[in-house]
Length: 114
Length: 109
Image 1: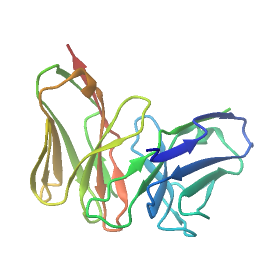
Image 2: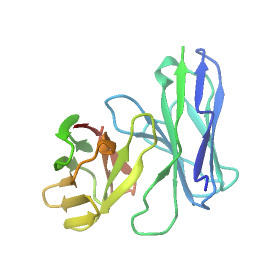
Image 3: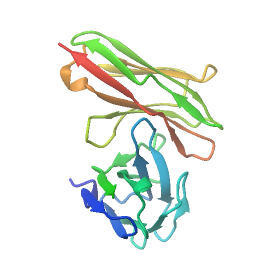
Image 4: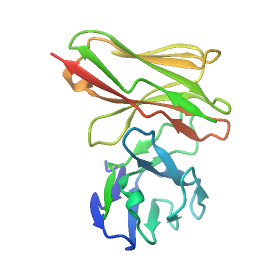
């Protein structure tokens, strides 16, 4: 009954450090997404994937990279963290079929860059 | 540009009814979603509208008018646990979701 799991839940980085956020889903979903959520703003799409081995840029991709080597995992990397990347990051997934296609979200990863 | 507007904050009384509005201007339309997000938690799906009209689901209902670029979420018999942010999102012609900033709903006893 895990659904979408994100690790780590919290992280503090120094400017210039690198890190990877891991998203894992056990629902056999085709589509996976990485969003960031900042106060007073809507969720903004960073990168997404429509299937294993595929990735695409979203609205705010700069400073981030992603990989989807396995269908169930979607990794978000920060190569050189900046204070502007302080945010709450949400991973989400959905099936490839179905009319509504609602998203299933992970619990979020709270990242602070000093 | 694409834009989703919803009130920043609303206050209502336990047991009452509240309507949260959402207006949108997007490149194409392929459905409108409402999500609930409790503080510090992930958004969870509430409703989906793709045709004009009212969709009812228990205490929650969602309405859509595509010609007006307008939707509302109606919450009846408010409970304290309904205190949360409510996010409106529209799926555009590229099947990408455009999100509003959310409406924080405060329920008072």
